[in-house]
Length: 376
Image (tube, rainbow, N blue to C red; front, side, top):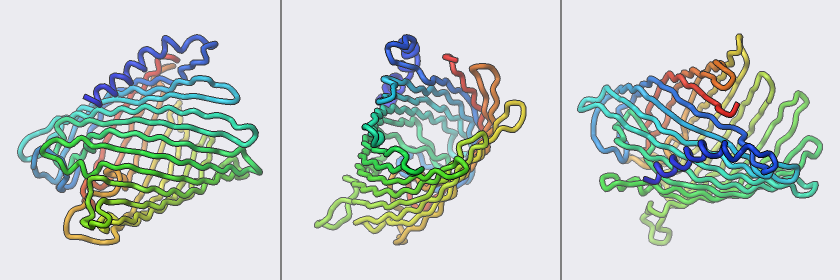
């Protein structure tokens, strides 16, 4: 019911905010509102174990037809030279019709919702101070066996404060501190999901340098401290799992008609529980460019290599949210069909961990999406 309530709130915002966004003197502006509908065909490979699945079935390959509907938007308040307040929301559902399993076919349904509040204020000639808040959730009905992996339902949020200096000789410094929590819904047959409940504290420091060709290079380092109140270490002096994740990377961005971005990030996770310690390295690239007759091409690639420090003979839950160490690639073609309607066709591939460490599945999918903006 939480996820339905979250999605209902998101849909209510989508329908009623346009009626309050008209008067300019009220300093309320509906910056964006998008209704999305689409369908896809997907194939999944990998006969693997997974936690919190209602049925035990077996197959090396499963296929699914998926229909989806979503709405997202952004509303601006108090937009002036000294301060800005923005509220954004995103919600939707996906309905699957899956086949290829030995015992039966499955029809899982996934609800998702998220809401963000962002307040930014200029501080003299120093720069900006930003306050952020976020709540999000997911609910899954009839969660299927592997290899059709769907992340389990959860409820979470994040809050943070950041500062960003004004450009000084082409260089900008930023610092952000925040906290995050996530609680997983665990039915009686899947109490193991409670082990994923976590609280996180993070600190991020970044430096961005403008380059001569209008591009920029950002270097950053992040420290995450995560507490898992349900995972025991079997050490009475330090009974519950605590992780420290150190991340650092470089990100080059060129904002232009031909948009490009390339980044590299390394991560080291250490814990008072030896099972989930790992090292990871990821490389990502984005290219977006116009082709012909208003058709735009977008290419995205994310390759991740991960190695557990202490191999074990039994399955372990991976740190953080499931599939957070994925390799992803997709190509998308987009074209406007009318002034407020555009279409996107996307072919994508994913290789990611399930909710059990060192067990990977693969997904290939072809998706057609229609995006409608009623306020254009």
